[in-house]
Image (cartoon, rainbow, N blue to C red; front, side, top):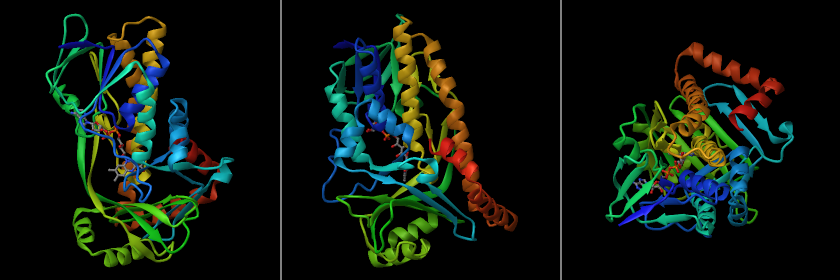
Length: 398
Ligand SMILES: Cc1cc2nc3c(=O)[nH]c(=O)nc-3n(C[C@H](O)[C@H](O)[C@H](O)COP(=O)(O)OP(=O)(O)OC[C@H]3O[C@@H](n4cnc5c(N)ncnc54)[C@H](O)[C@@H]3O)c2cc1C
């Protein structure tokens, strides 16, 4: 059996699903297939917070608003963060970002993955020009003479399209099968993620303490006005992560409180912990004839600045704009110039963000005394320069 589409998107995570909705809404004549391996969406729970959250920047929020998903997020659950406190755990360097200095109500929003996904998928289901094929996996694909691509699913159905977009995450099957060259290395770090309840209010602040073993972030969560839950991302060297994962809940709370210098008082409760291996990956190119990579399929970055999904959503925004520009100008979608324009817009930006994060990780991970002085002095200087802080917020938290 054969089905014809203009675009096939593999992966209906936050990035793939948002891209599908953006293209479908901008170009009603385009037919899109979204192939997703997992059988169902995880419903956000009203009793507990999802352990996976994302810190969405203003630009990501505007994009989600434009595709109609922000309203759904607002109705379910989200938490604005108005301040950000970052400090060096091994010294006295400290920097504080305040949304009032930026003349804005929030620097960004913490949103649970399941809440964001559900809101985007509601929009996706309402688009009559999208077929969501789930649970399905791509078995193979081959370029056809007619300038398109034929994608065979594991159920035997062959889907024909002009463009195949890989949004299938960090272990992207499409990226590997199409032999995209990568730069990648293991950080030797695990990220422990979970939800905690703290004695004191989080004051709608995102907190990050840098230690030589890795950064520890407390991201505020809010439900019906409560201000005592945070999602934590504790990135640390593999051996330490193993030790922390093996602790019982009481001992873990005690260690976490110590590592966080008790900024929010005692850690009163911890949910189930998950440990995720961290790897830096970046594809050398994002496009080939008929194929484009977006989101984690193209790049994964250390979670220390919470930028992963934001970079993916910027990819989705840029690619959807290029597709709709091509449609308006009647350029056929298999034309490589469309994908090259997308790559030009995104590759260098992503590379720059990854380089900055890598520099941060190395600077704060170093036990070298000169670097120790430099980072503390640097943080103090930046904290005193309001113009520089405004620039950092504009570019790093855009
Ligand atoms: C510990 C941790 C903390 C993080 N914190 C933040 C943060 O605060 N802010 C932030 O912006 N980012 C954060 N990130 C990064 C963020 O979670 C990812 O960048 C983001 O989830 C990537 O979205 P995606 O849609 O590209 O990929 P995914 O979410 O991985 O989605 C891929 C989808 O493709 C599907 N799929 C996979 N293979 C196939 C296949 N063969 N066929 C069909 N479907 C397939 C999967 O089922 C999935 O639905 C964090 C990451 C980690 C590890």
